[in-house]
Each structure stands twice: as C-alpha cells, then as structure tokens.
Length: 501
Length: 136
Image 1 (tube, chains in turn purple, orange):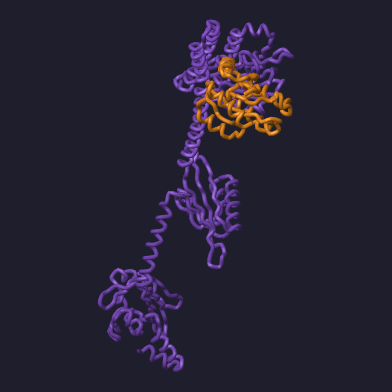
Image 2 (image 1 turned 60 degrees about the vertical axis):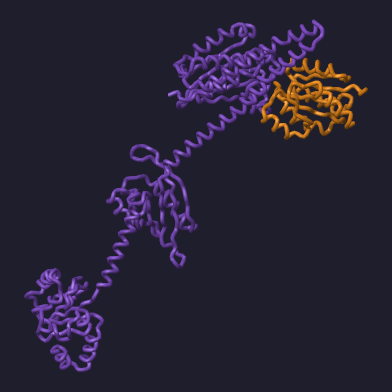
C-alpha cells in the first residue's frame, strides 16, 4: 500500500479517514499506475472479482475484463496516452468484468485519471451491476411485451398527460411512425397544424378531454368518418381518467374500437325489423280481410240457401233467389281484389319504365270522361318533373284511383278543382293531388285511412278498395303515401316515389 | 213474452240485415226492428235519445266491419254514452269475422254481452230474448 503510505505522510488524520473510506467503499476501487498495472484494490474489489487479496497486484487492469471489453477499454484509454492528465475528466462506461474463475459479470466502470505527487495514476470505480442488468433486461422484455400488445391491438389507443399532451399513441391510432413520433409531447392543436388539418377536430377533442378531466368520469361516443377510400368507418370511443394515489389526474386514456361492421348490421337489422313489422301488420290486415270480407258474403249465401230450402211458397223462394246474385257478385269482386293485392305484394319481377306524367294524366282523364263532363270539374296539371321510372300498370292505377276519388267525393256546394303537380328532390319524386272536395276528418280516420274496406262518405260507389290498392302499389315500389285533409275544404294526397336518380 | 222487444240492427250489409230480420220473424217473439247502416247514425240516435227509455232498444246487434264508422269506433263512443242510458240495453257483437284478433279485441269492451259469429241462428236469438226476461 505504497499510495496510502504516502497519504499518511502527507496528512495523518485525513489519511486515516481516506483509508477507511477506501476500505469500506461499497464500490470496488482499483488503483493502477500510468501503464495500467494494478497497485492496490479494496476489499470490495476483492469480493467482486473473487481473487485473493494480493493476487492481482502487479497485473494489468485489463486482466479483470473479458476480451471483448478489453477492446473497448483500449480505445477508451487511448485518449489518456501522452496526456498530462491535467484537463481530463473521468469516464464512465458499462463493461463486462471477468472473475478469477472466468465467469463474466456486468459492471459499471468509472475511470478517473489522477496525478499525485507528480505521478500519474488511474483510479477505477467498479460496481457489479449484473443484478441490475438482469432486472433491466427483464424490464425491457416486459416493456417490449406490453408495447407489442399495445401496438398490435386492433384498436386505437392514445394516452394523454393531465394537460392533454400526448404521452403515447399506438399504430392503430396513427399508422405512420413519423407522425407517431411527432405527436408525443404535443397536443391536438400542434398535430392539426403539423398535418394541415382543421382545428375543429382539435377543439372537439379538447372539449372531450376537459369533460373527462373535470368530471373524473369516463365518456363514450360514436363517430363516423370516411376512410381514405371514402367508406364510412364508425368507431366506438371511450376516454377515461387515471388518478394517482393522491387522487390527482395522472393521465387520460382514450381508445376506440372499429364497430363499422356492427353498425352496418344494426342498420340492416333495424331495416329488417321494420320490414318484418310492416309485413306483420299487413298479415294481420290480410287475416282480418279474409276472415271478414270473404266470409261475410259466404255466410249470406249459406243463409239464403238454407232459407230457400225451408221456404214453403214460391214467392218467398223467388225473393231469396233474387238476393243471391248480388251477394255472389260481391264475393267475386272481393275475391278478385284480394288476388290483385296479393299479386302486387309478390310481383317482385314487375319492371319500371320511363313514363310521361302528362301522358298518364291525359289517358286517365279520358277513362273518366263522362264523370268529368258531368261534374264540370277543372283539372290543373303542373308537371314540373315530366318523367318517372315506375311500373306503368301501377302508375295508371294510382292516377285512376286518386282522380276518380276526387270526382267521387266532390263537394255538392262548389265545382271541383283538382291540382296535380310533380316535383323532384334528391332521388325522389313527389306527386301531389289537391282537391276542394268533401275532405275527411283525419282526427277520426288517420289510422284506418288506407285500409281495405274503409269508406268515409255515404257514397253509392264507395267500396274502400282504391286507396288500399294505391298504398299497396306505392309501397311495393318502396314509396310513401300520405294525406292532408280538412272536412269541407278538401284533401291533398301526396305520393313520394323512391329511386328516381 | 207479452212485451214487444225492441231490436237495433247496426250493420251495413243489406243482405245480412234482410236475412237477420227473416230469422227473427221465424221466432215466436213480438219484435220491433230498427236498422242503422253505420255506427255514426246509431251514435247520433243515442245522443238524442239516451234519456228516453221508450226510445231505447232492449238489444243491439252490432256488426264490426262497417263503412263510415265501424263497430270499434261505435263501441268506443257507446261505452261512454251507455253510462247515462235511462234503460238497461244489451249489446251483442254479430260479426262475420272469425279472426281471433277481433275476438280478442272485443274482450276489452265490458259493454259487449257476447261475440256472435254470423250467421245469427234462430235458437241463439231466442236465447238472447230469454236472457232479457230472466234478468228483468
């Protein structure tokens, strides 16, 4: 221990303290001369490298390093060559040490060049970091594992600090790595500027963030945005706060799941449910129609036949027989009408054609000529939209029903005026037929207006089948029909035709 | 059965009204029959005559499927009117409908004594009249 001896000579009390520090240091300390030859080391160093206390004295320092570490050590030591050590600070590296039994250990290595009494020395501070290294490796692996999960999850994840700066985003949220790197430490406003995007999205995100921050509660919402291909993608998004043990907001996590498919299914299902319930209503209607409209004349026929059999006079018999004909005719008509309406519902093959409204209107009026002349009615056509794509058979039937209804239910106190107009909006055409006739109290009749067998006026030819047919034909082509009416003022029928690109 | 029974037929099926009157005539019961071709006409009548027992019927035979005002709308208004009647009136639904939906729906109306599916048999009619005298 030449060095410590010199120290002792220099200042006895200090040297004693220095000796104690050297001996008890939790770091392994190795002192070499300028050439790297070991002069002395402390008990901790003996323990770390597992040599005998004097065994390494006189050996070169690199004996304590693996071959690989030695190369690094040489290059490190190069900068000290020929130097007077005056202006040089120390170096700190992580390296691999070699125990006496040749087992490797991870070490941190501090190299401190020192001049003492004109002699140059190196003091090495060594710490065994094998454990720390192992923990760090395990931590790295764990980090990699979790990052892998976060990055591979098919959801987008963003983590914010308490001031709404990004701490983390996964590739699900931002796929381009460059953007992902940019955003960490920034907020949405900086990102919007960076990507040349509107500030409105950033405003929205800030509002949501503040809501979570201020209420301390999770929020959920759905948003639908077009993807680069123009397809609408719907996300279910959640943002929730994470608090530390003091209850302070430490971060906010946002994540979103692509629910486009589920959304599409929902829309599809809603459509199916609507269609089903509409069909169910139609079915109940139909069941009622069959059980009444068809059965009523049958009951009458069977009662008449029974009475004919029982009757004792020819007069009575003749009377009963005369009643049979109108009942059978009624049955026949009802039957045909029902068959017709079933055909509409199942006529999926029916072809639409381009039809001129004016042409259809004129042909309908020709068919109603005698009624038109008799009533001195005025018809005012205004076909802003001239053509429609629709099954001709249905369109003629619709025109006939609406115009003949107007004629049938005109007011006795004024001449009939009927305005027929068409208008196009988006992919729909609206046909309206407005009359100044009797009108109907819709308060009473709205629910049954288009039902089969419903009649609202005591008119000889009222059978209540026309509007039912019209509605069936319109709806079979995905259109809509509705009515506005005021008693004794008039009615306006509206038909909206769909799919008119 | 000395008292003449007053029957209201609320039905717009002319043939059926004729036939029902024939059936009633075969029964050995003194009756007076008044016809209404739709519910609205009958309601109008009751609104005018609810407080005149001599003008009110003993039995109403009501059809469900009628034009203008059908049996359901009639029942809706009748249920309120009946409460202030100055006489006990028995109402029977006589419908050609065999739809369970109609029969189920009729159960919502307490004013209905019974749901009779057309045709109205002579025997059934006699039962109805017997029920009147027993209760009286």
